[in-house]
Length: 276
Image 1 (cartoon, rainbow, N blue to C red):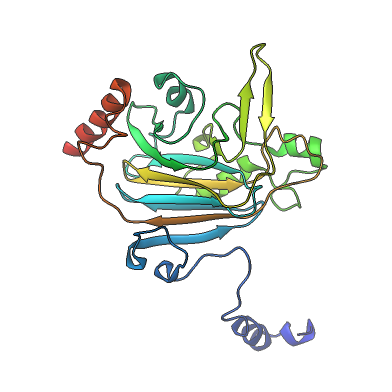
Image 2: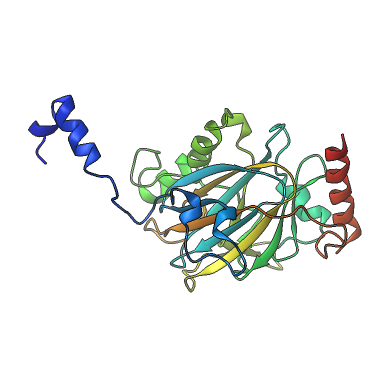
């Protein structure tokens, strides 16, 4: 359709309506219950979010306690920079330093917890087929992307993770001060004996997955931008699929809940919070 035909409101309306039913690589499934290729045992009517997040894109959603979130690295080069907030009181949010030190481990994987700055479990990692995650480096920003790619603005060809996280947080009334240090899923780092940092950024085999369980009512914000330590000079990132569904609240005999004394205490803090 020519620019002239869309210059009038009627032409622009007709053009917009003609896009109905169009599908692109990165978009949400509407309704979410129409999602396909679900995990075994997940009924379509329980799905509350299904979206493919574009390379350089972002998304944010609110989930109830017990919801599961599966992230899939569709083509092997996604990087999910993740923020988590207590949906009821967003002043409580992911504390990645406590997440690592309370669990006596610098590396995340199945069975690990994502802890808040108030000693509670926000989400737990139930399944992990990736094994390369990063709790040390945080998100790229406009300056780091500009140094590497020539620009790093949100409106440019090389958007940075921090500004994408800001856009996602803004949808819940949150601002720049709320964009706290993130965890990066699917891209990892290894700390060497001499203290140096080795990035583990792939690309990897497609289809790697992480499944998380919401232990509180949470707001999740995801940016899918290259890792800040990615050594490649080209802006390298591929789409990320996010699928969430309703599930039961963690049971008292859950193995993740009871795996360590420190983890159990964090779950007890959650349970005390909801008793109030």
